[in-house]
Length: 419
Image (tube, rainbow, N blue to C red; front, side):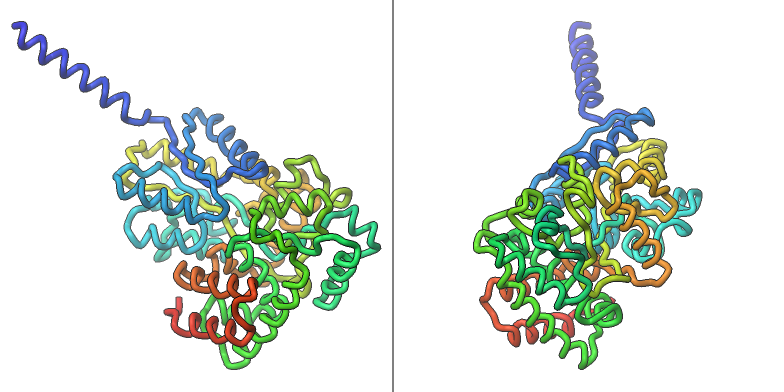
């Protein structure tokens, strides 16, 4: 009898331990990389909306500029059999996870809530795998922007640059005044973000689409690469020597303080400036990169759900429905600086740069001129992106010539499998 009681006690303890380790039915375990000031405001808006639905929020934030460290840690969690319920993902990384059979299909919710009708086609292309919804988009960042310190713009008597010569004249004025003309950080994705704006401006929509999205450039497109790298060499003269030691948000701080005239970056800078209480038109200005007016280079943050996480279907459905809701997309993107991922969110509460981003996205969606960002992995698969990173950084650092860069880019693109 005593032995039986012992077994009963051990059994009860094991049940309690298992219950303690298992997530509660209403818990959402979210893994993300939003850690800067503006990004934290975005994730806080998401958390508030999720908790308002009665769900229990738990997050793991992975610091580090870029997404490489985050991706490594996520892969390790999945390999260890401990995936999060949901994880942030961008671009072709979503396709890779879906190809492995790891993701929850979202077709039923998407059909019920008419995602096909309200989400731009260019985002749908990344959110779907084999025509099945596998990710929930929460924003529509674009990367082809100049973020300009308004006080310095006014002091130097400058205005919005519409063309490449306008931009060079603007940078010359900043350099002569002792400012850092363009602030940038040390990572390859930042250099590639600058490159893609130069490429889109120099070559136009069809060049960019053929060369970097379809991976099918013609002979004239290859010739255009020479001009693009010549322009990148020109821009190298407007960078300061300290850029190889700083992060992207430290570069943003230089533009915010007025030590630098501008930064070429995505709309997350709008969120960073807003987090510091800055106002468009008073403290900073947002201009499309010269000659890219009428096109949008896209980076959409999305959330994927893992099959092997022991979540209740009702919890998953509530989480996804909340992410795609008009209210969450409004509040998250007012905080984060982007346009919402759906076209029917009212824009009246967004600041001037946010409203411009929304207007541009709606118009560019109608024109089919929203194209994936090279830098953010929205244009093509990761092997192509990573190979281009190396070439573009080597060139910006002056380690290879314009001609060498063109040859290497041509080799990468022509050897890549076409999507």
